[in-house]
Length: 83
Image (cartoon, rainbow, N blue to C red):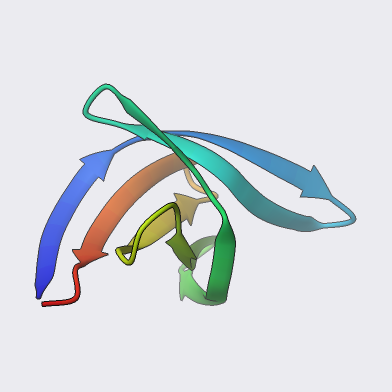
């Protein structure tokens, strides 16, 4: 089951050598450590870029995070729960 969330989240990330990698995020008061990144892609938005990450924390759920270079903000876009 896929749940569309579209909520801003706080993310701890590593910015290194022109790349960004999320390592943890806080959603609805709970902290999730990123255990595995399943993939990422970039989506151009005019002068800006949005970078999408599919990540796993503990458990089987997959979280889709979006980083926007427009405002340097993070959004939890979707949660994929096996069902």
